[in-house]
Image 1 (cartoon, helix red, strand yellow):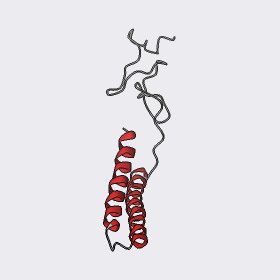
Image 2: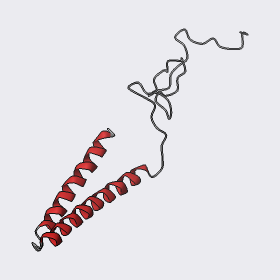
Image 3: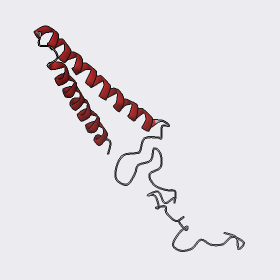
Image 4: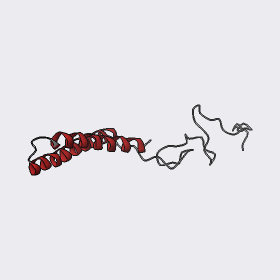
Length: 110
C-alpha cells in the first residue's frame, strides 16, 4: 500500500447499520432475493400482484365449492322429490369445505 491510502481498521470494514455480515465476509444484507436466509431456503423473488392472486384464488375456491355442493344437493332433491331439503345442506357443506381449504392453504404458507 502506498502512504496516501489509509489502512483499514483491524476489525475489518465497517458494517452499515441494520445489516448482518454474510458468511463470505461482505456486508450486504443477508436474505436478499434468491439468497439463502438464516433460517431456511432462499426466498422466492417478488411477484407484483401476488397478494391479489391469492385473494382471487380464495374467492374462486369459496364460490366453486358452494356452487358445486349446492348443485349436488339440488340434484339429490330432484332425484328424491323431497322439495328443497338437500339444496341448503349442500350449500352449507360446500361453504364449510371450501372455507376449510382456503384456511388450510393460507396457513401452509406461513
